[in-house]
Length: 479
Ligand code: URP
Ligand code: ZN
Ligand code: ZN
Image 1 (cartoon, rainbow, N blue to C red):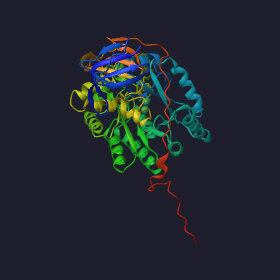
Image 2 (tube, rainbow, N blue to C red):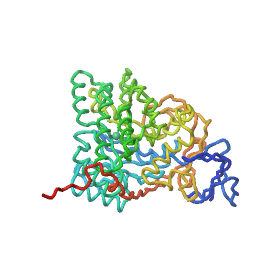
Image 3 (cartoon, rainbow, N blue to C red):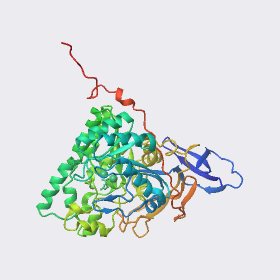
Image 4 (cartoon, rainbow, N blue to C red):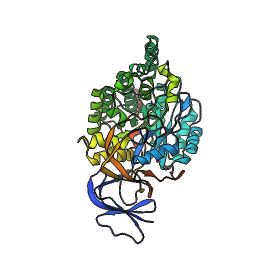
């Protein structure tokens, strides 16, 4: 049955216009003023609402085995919560253990994700190096639609990529036309600062931000962008949380590098005071890396987003329940790192970004959907409202309100980092590939209806572009 979304204001990254949207099957068939209603079509009245591309969250961790436990949110509950919040595509991470085949890890994650209710795709992490890893990167690009590889510069002794891994992987990605993504924190500094702080007697969650100050992130962000410059490869830095990381991106972009930055909704609105509350459980729920920062960093992140130095908003949705967080009672180093928010990202960003005048509705669409689609090569199937695109659509009620709470959210976690936050601007209806999956505050999802989305590699054009780097032709003097 066709669906006609009537009377709304269509918002894309390019602008706003009054238009109807006709959906046939899984795709958008037409966008235009006063479209005819096909016989038998269901009509959804979008008067007074915005009609926008479904959100794309480029950074989630469903069912992630991490720090001795596994995230409480699986692909079914996580994508259900996502669509309740207007997000219709997630980019999750397949993360091999050091020594493990990338393809094997990728296949595990593909299997786990089969229960998803909305579309998904994967970055694959490079956690170690060998010739086989390089070959498997090629297979993932060629046969499996993986065009981005993740590098954790932190988590020493587990999944950290040292400089040797980074350089080899960046080089290989440049050959393949793949995008390198990076968690920028200096893993060695973290370990040494953690030890120092723990041995000084600070054992609670407040030790977490103290062992990961902004320069720890800044060093790694600068190193990553410099390595990318040397090797002529674009780089995408995930979850930038501080001025120092933003500086690295800004410097590189002003020098002409292809560098992209992601910011998490929570880093924009929550500050580091959360670690200093008396309630251990509550403080532990904010333990994530990089940590929450002071308000001056938050203000800089908003400016970075407004100025085009940060491009995407994500959640790093990585849920651990209280019982799991308590694995680190007595030693903050053992608190599983991660927070939730896949359901809340868009409402938080609308409330604190659009309603405050920091972002226009079009900029909101760019930051929550289109930019991720473009950067990770999902566009124009995703990230826009136009004929031929997947019918991943959110009908956004700018006046609708919601008070965020763990008691009413759909996320599988017993805590919400935004507890009590009042949001104005919420998804009234979400469609995933032409199916209404959220309406009137109710989910109507089908386990397994989500599909894996291929993301073809980019042309490896940049290898020839830059002559200022270590890849330029060696100069030999004939004597
Ligand atoms: O604390 C976090 N961010 N946990 C998830 C893993 C990561 O670093 O992205
Ligand atoms: Zn990370
Ligand atoms: Zn993450």
